[in-house]
Image 1 (cartoon, rainbow, N blue to C red):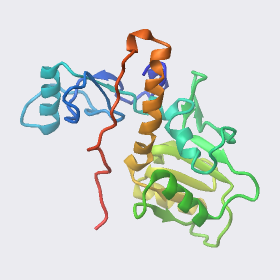
Image 2 (cartoon, rainbow, N blue to C red; image 1 turned 90 degrees about the horizontal axis):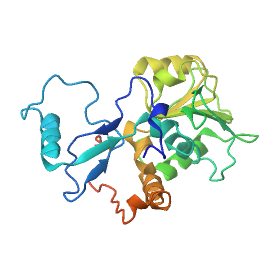
Image 3 (cartoon, one colour; image 1 turned 180 degrees about the vertical axis):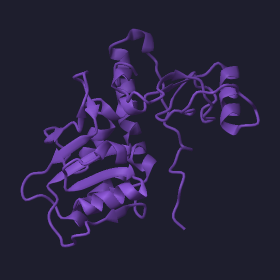
Length: 242
């Protein structure tokens, strides 16, 4: 995992690396790779009265490790943000740049995608995102206060929660999983479109890509030969439309 998504690419506030936790999916697994940290903030104690902490204790008792890449996997070249950008063009020569470059040349925070002229209509973009993420009714669209329709030529992209990353980024569209209410209002006032797809919906679809990267690891490290990988069948977006 360190070769695929170096932890030095993670955001400074992020809780990443080798952790112990309980996902309760594969009882025979020796390691669980979980994108999100099971515990985001430090704990002063562990108790069975708390379901998440009880899961940690069960996993500790079973000797199972959990590795969490989180924002390192977002930032790395070929990671989740680049995968989101590929919704608009499957070719590898997408015109993208980092929203916030990092000292490590292998990646950066967020992406800004510049589409070929004349750009794309907003509803075309919505359809492409739905197909790419395999979702239907979980997309929210905000249009600028100024109204009117124009083709989208630049897209700011951030997996998960992008409000704090976008700031006042100059782009026609902000594409992310979630933003706070007032962050969306500020974007509308700046003349931006906003597409929100649900936090985990912008991340989960990348797992098959990660699986293929991990399966390729034995070619570089013989100690990993015979590696078996199973994607969770229980993991899903925590909210559903009713």
